[in-house]
Image 1 (cartoon, rainbow, N blue to C red):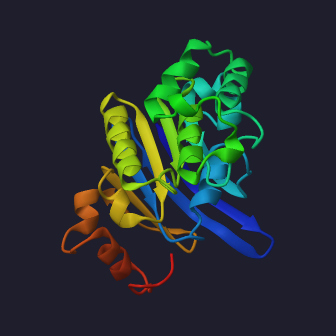
Image 2 (cartoon, one colour; image 1 turned 180 degrees about the horizontal axis):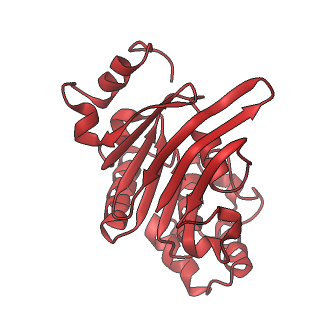
Length: 237
Protein backbone atom coordinates (compact mmCIF):
# COMPACT_ATOMS: atom_id res chain seq x y z
CA UNK A 1 0.00 0.00 0.00
CA UNK A 2 1.17 3.48 -0.89
CA UNK A 3 -0.27 6.37 1.10
CA UNK A 4 0.46 9.99 0.25
CA UNK A 5 -1.20 12.55 2.49
CA UNK A 6 -1.18 16.35 2.19
CA UNK A 7 2.26 16.42 0.57
CA UNK A 8 3.52 19.87 -0.35
CA UNK A 9 6.92 20.64 -1.88
CA UNK A 10 8.18 24.20 -2.27
CA UNK A 11 11.35 25.42 -3.97
CA UNK A 12 11.72 28.93 -2.67
CA UNK A 13 8.64 30.84 -3.79
CA UNK A 14 7.60 28.11 -6.24
CA UNK A 15 5.19 25.37 -5.13
CA UNK A 16 5.84 22.23 -7.18
CA UNK A 17 3.40 19.99 -5.28
CA UNK A 18 0.44 21.38 -3.36
CA UNK A 19 -1.45 19.31 -0.74
CA UNK A 20 -1.28 16.09 -2.76
CA UNK A 21 -3.15 13.11 -1.26
CA UNK A 22 -3.93 9.68 -2.74
CA UNK A 23 -3.44 5.96 -2.19
CA UNK A 24 -2.37 3.06 -4.39
CA UNK A 25 -3.81 -0.27 -3.24
CA UNK A 26 -2.62 -3.88 -3.54
CA UNK A 27 -4.02 -5.81 -6.47
CA UNK A 28 -4.50 -2.64 -8.50
CA UNK A 29 -2.60 -0.65 -11.12
CA UNK A 30 -2.92 3.02 -10.21
CA UNK A 31 -2.20 5.57 -12.92
CA UNK A 32 -0.66 8.83 -11.70
CA UNK A 33 -1.32 11.02 -14.71
CA UNK A 34 -0.82 14.56 -15.87
CA UNK A 35 1.13 16.71 -18.34
CA UNK A 36 4.87 17.18 -18.11
CA UNK A 37 5.72 19.51 -15.23
CA UNK A 38 2.52 18.75 -13.33
CA UNK A 39 4.34 17.49 -10.21
CA UNK A 40 4.40 13.72 -10.82
CA UNK A 41 8.15 13.20 -10.58
CA UNK A 42 8.47 15.52 -7.58
CA UNK A 43 5.83 13.50 -5.75
CA UNK A 44 7.54 10.20 -6.56
CA UNK A 45 10.94 11.51 -5.49
CA UNK A 46 9.43 12.40 -2.12
CA UNK A 47 7.80 8.96 -1.87
CA UNK A 48 11.17 7.29 -2.55
CA UNK A 49 13.10 9.42 -0.08
CA UNK A 50 15.10 11.33 -2.70
CA UNK A 51 13.56 14.68 -1.78
CA UNK A 52 12.05 15.90 1.48
CA UNK A 53 8.52 17.22 1.53
CA UNK A 54 7.94 20.71 2.86
CA UNK A 55 4.95 19.20 4.66
CA UNK A 56 2.84 16.05 4.60
CA UNK A 57 3.70 12.34 4.62
CA UNK A 58 4.46 9.69 1.99
CA UNK A 59 4.40 6.11 3.26
CA UNK A 60 5.09 2.65 1.85
CA UNK A 61 3.38 -0.06 3.88
CA UNK A 62 3.02 2.46 6.69
CA UNK A 63 6.68 3.53 6.72
CA UNK A 64 8.69 6.28 5.05
CA UNK A 65 11.02 4.82 2.42
CA UNK A 66 14.26 5.62 4.35
CA UNK A 67 12.98 3.47 7.24
CA UNK A 68 12.68 0.31 5.13
CA UNK A 69 15.30 -2.25 6.16
CA UNK A 70 15.46 -3.95 2.74
CA UNK A 71 14.03 -1.38 0.35
CA UNK A 72 14.53 -3.33 -2.91
CA UNK A 73 12.62 -6.28 -1.44
CA UNK A 74 9.70 -3.99 -0.60
CA UNK A 75 9.53 -1.53 -3.50
CA UNK A 76 11.06 -1.54 -6.97
CA UNK A 77 11.27 1.77 -8.79
CA UNK A 78 12.01 3.39 -12.13
CA UNK A 79 12.50 7.16 -12.10
CA UNK A 80 12.54 9.12 -15.34
CA UNK A 81 16.12 10.20 -16.07
CA UNK A 82 17.78 7.62 -13.82
CA UNK A 83 20.09 5.20 -15.64
CA UNK A 84 23.01 2.83 -15.25
CA UNK A 85 26.67 3.77 -15.71
CA UNK A 86 27.12 3.87 -19.52
CA UNK A 87 30.38 1.88 -19.56
CA UNK A 88 28.96 -0.88 -17.38
CA UNK A 89 27.45 -3.98 -18.97
CA UNK A 90 23.76 -4.56 -18.28
CA UNK A 91 24.41 -7.75 -16.33
CA UNK A 92 27.09 -6.02 -14.24
CA UNK A 93 24.73 -3.20 -13.36
CA UNK A 94 22.23 -5.75 -12.04
CA UNK A 95 24.96 -7.72 -10.29
CA UNK A 96 26.11 -4.60 -8.44
CA UNK A 97 22.55 -3.87 -7.31
CA UNK A 98 21.97 -7.47 -6.27
CA UNK A 99 25.15 -7.62 -4.20
CA UNK A 100 24.43 -4.29 -2.50
CA UNK A 101 21.02 -5.58 -1.42
CA UNK A 102 22.03 -9.19 -0.65
CA UNK A 103 19.93 -10.59 -3.48
CA UNK A 104 20.95 -13.98 -4.91
CA UNK A 105 22.78 -13.89 -8.25
CA UNK A 106 20.32 -16.35 -9.82
CA UNK A 107 17.73 -13.59 -9.75
CA UNK A 108 19.74 -11.58 -12.32
CA UNK A 109 19.12 -14.08 -15.11
CA UNK A 110 15.46 -14.33 -14.17
CA UNK A 111 14.78 -10.60 -14.48
CA UNK A 112 16.77 -10.30 -17.70
CA UNK A 113 14.56 -13.00 -19.20
CA UNK A 114 11.43 -11.31 -17.86
CA UNK A 115 12.18 -7.99 -19.57
CA UNK A 116 13.60 -9.51 -22.78
CA UNK A 117 17.24 -8.47 -22.30
CA UNK A 118 18.89 -11.88 -21.88
CA UNK A 119 20.63 -11.63 -25.27
CA UNK A 120 21.93 -8.12 -24.49
CA UNK A 121 23.10 -8.84 -20.94
CA UNK A 122 26.80 -8.42 -21.77
CA UNK A 123 26.37 -5.34 -23.96
CA UNK A 124 27.56 -2.07 -22.44
CA UNK A 125 24.74 0.26 -21.45
CA UNK A 126 26.03 3.08 -23.69
CA UNK A 127 25.08 0.89 -26.67
CA UNK A 128 21.53 0.33 -25.44
CA UNK A 129 18.64 2.06 -27.15
CA UNK A 130 16.27 4.14 -25.02
CA UNK A 131 13.84 1.22 -24.97
CA UNK A 132 16.56 -1.19 -23.82
CA UNK A 133 17.51 1.20 -21.02
CA UNK A 134 13.87 1.25 -19.94
CA UNK A 135 13.87 -2.56 -19.88
CA UNK A 136 17.07 -2.58 -17.82
CA UNK A 137 15.46 -0.17 -15.37
CA UNK A 138 12.48 -2.49 -15.01
CA UNK A 139 14.80 -5.46 -14.50
CA UNK A 140 16.51 -3.56 -11.68
CA UNK A 141 13.15 -2.71 -10.13
CA UNK A 142 12.17 -6.39 -10.14
CA UNK A 143 15.41 -7.73 -8.66
CA UNK A 144 14.17 -7.92 -5.07
CA UNK A 145 10.80 -9.46 -6.00
CA UNK A 146 9.09 -6.44 -4.43
CA UNK A 147 5.39 -6.32 -3.63
CA UNK A 148 5.25 -2.67 -4.76
CA UNK A 149 6.35 -1.12 -8.06
CA UNK A 150 6.72 2.64 -8.58
CA UNK A 151 7.31 3.38 -12.27
CA UNK A 152 7.86 6.85 -13.72
CA UNK A 153 7.22 6.94 -17.50
CA UNK A 154 8.17 3.24 -17.95
CA UNK A 155 7.15 2.95 -21.63
CA UNK A 156 9.20 5.90 -22.89
CA UNK A 157 11.21 4.71 -25.89
CA UNK A 158 9.49 1.36 -26.23
CA UNK A 159 8.10 0.18 -29.55
CA UNK A 160 4.44 -0.95 -29.74
CA UNK A 161 5.35 -4.57 -29.02
CA UNK A 162 7.41 -3.51 -25.99
CA UNK A 163 4.52 -1.41 -24.71
CA UNK A 164 2.13 -4.34 -25.04
CA UNK A 165 4.61 -6.58 -23.20
CA UNK A 166 5.01 -4.15 -20.30
CA UNK A 167 1.24 -3.59 -20.15
CA UNK A 168 0.56 -7.31 -19.88
CA UNK A 169 3.30 -7.79 -17.30
CA UNK A 170 2.00 -5.01 -15.05
CA UNK A 171 -1.55 -6.37 -15.23
CA UNK A 172 -0.34 -9.83 -14.17
CA UNK A 173 1.85 -8.34 -11.45
CA UNK A 174 -1.08 -6.51 -9.90
CA UNK A 175 -3.35 -9.53 -10.21
CA UNK A 176 -0.92 -11.41 -7.95
CA UNK A 177 -1.83 -8.99 -5.15
CA UNK A 178 0.99 -6.49 -5.69
CA UNK A 179 0.73 -2.69 -5.80
CA UNK A 180 1.65 -0.86 -9.02
CA UNK A 181 1.88 2.94 -9.21
CA UNK A 182 2.41 4.03 -12.81
CA UNK A 183 3.23 7.66 -13.59
CA UNK A 184 2.82 8.92 -17.14
CA UNK A 185 1.81 11.84 -19.36
CA UNK A 186 0.58 9.36 -22.00
CA UNK A 187 -3.03 9.17 -20.93
CA UNK A 188 -4.36 7.21 -23.90
CA UNK A 189 -1.74 4.48 -23.56
CA UNK A 190 -1.98 4.32 -19.77
CA UNK A 191 -5.76 3.93 -19.89
CA UNK A 192 -5.16 0.49 -21.40
CA UNK A 193 -3.33 -0.63 -18.25
CA UNK A 194 -4.76 0.95 -15.11
CA UNK A 195 -7.59 0.23 -12.67
CA UNK A 196 -7.52 3.52 -10.77
CA UNK A 197 -6.66 7.05 -11.82
CA UNK A 198 -5.06 9.99 -10.02
CA UNK A 199 -4.83 13.12 -12.19
CA UNK A 200 -2.51 15.95 -11.23
CA UNK A 201 -2.21 19.35 -12.89
CA UNK A 202 -0.09 22.32 -11.83
CA UNK A 203 0.88 20.54 -8.62
CA UNK A 204 -2.66 19.79 -7.45
CA UNK A 205 -4.79 16.65 -7.59
CA UNK A 206 -7.83 17.40 -9.73
CA UNK A 207 -9.46 13.95 -9.89
CA UNK A 208 -9.18 10.48 -8.36
CA UNK A 209 -11.25 7.34 -8.81
CA UNK A 210 -11.65 4.16 -10.79
CA UNK A 211 -10.98 4.47 -14.50
CA UNK A 212 -14.67 4.10 -15.39
CA UNK A 213 -15.66 6.84 -12.95
CA UNK A 214 -13.16 9.31 -14.39
CA UNK A 215 -14.05 8.63 -18.01
CA UNK A 216 -17.83 8.38 -17.52
CA UNK A 217 -19.51 10.66 -20.02
CA UNK A 218 -16.31 11.23 -22.01
CA UNK A 219 -15.01 9.63 -25.18
CA UNK A 220 -11.53 9.12 -23.72
CA UNK A 221 -9.33 9.77 -20.71
CA UNK A 222 -7.72 12.70 -22.54
CA UNK A 223 -11.13 14.27 -23.07
CA UNK A 224 -11.91 13.82 -19.37
CA UNK A 225 -8.65 15.58 -18.50
CA UNK A 226 -9.33 18.49 -20.81
CA UNK A 227 -12.82 18.91 -19.33
CA UNK A 228 -11.32 19.12 -15.84
CA UNK A 229 -8.66 21.70 -16.65
CA UNK A 230 -8.02 24.76 -18.74
CA UNK A 231 -5.79 22.70 -21.03
CA UNK A 232 -6.82 22.41 -24.66
CA UNK A 233 -6.56 19.39 -26.97
CA UNK A 234 -3.35 19.53 -28.95
CA UNK A 235 -1.32 21.31 -26.26
CA UNK A 236 2.20 19.98 -25.79
CA UNK A 237 2.49 17.53 -22.96
